[in-house]
Amino acid sequence: GQNIDQPTEMTATEGAIVQINCTYQTSGFNGLFWYQQHAAEAPTFLSYNVLDGLEEKGRFSSFLSRSKGYSYLLLKELQMKDSASYLCAVKSGQNFVFGPGTRLSVLP
Amino acid sequence: ETGVTQTPRHLVMGMTNKKSLKCEQHLGHNAMYWYKQSAKKPLELMFVYNFKEQTENNSVPSRFSPECPNSSHLFLHLHTLQPEDSALYLCASSQESMGPTNPAFFGQGTRLTVV
Figure 1: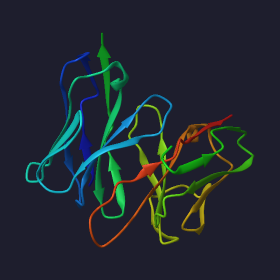
Figure 2: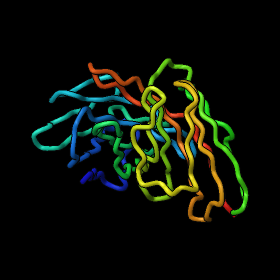
Figure 3: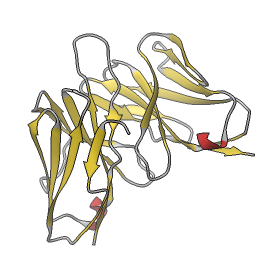
Figure 4: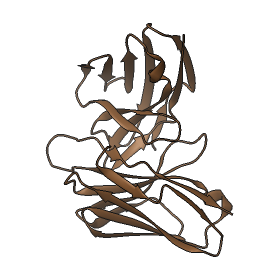
């Protein structure tokens, strides 16, 4: 089976750091991807990991542990525009399997 | 602008209508996808095309019929839909290879309402 879990909602303060966790159990693994989706808009690609470790891209970093089936997205220096849903997805075979998404609210 | 364009952006149709959703990608990718996004549910894969060949059909009802005439265009033909089919339909594309995994890039979606 395919199962991806994320917290449903998170709240953080402008300027702070927030970590969004993702755990997965999938029948195959060819990479883990993070997407940002604002309301009524398309998901946009943020970051991905194929090997264990940390990938850094500006204010966003993503970490992967394949043995633990675990990833996190780290957002630094939060801005109001970072309020959005963050989707964790695993490439399994031909398919990108998506988690339910984490709705992040950034407060002033 | 992601390089993936979907039309129309919004569609309202009756249960007896026939309509089509269109997707075009300008990224030179060889794989295209249809996803359904309903409220409070994860994105659900509907169809995958790789090099114009359908490689996955995720148990989608026959009232949804995909068509991929070439690697840049993807259609979703709709007929006799149900109100529960109302959702955001997202098209995506990616470059499939034997080497590194590449991300999928999404279009803006078609917001479909079935009345």
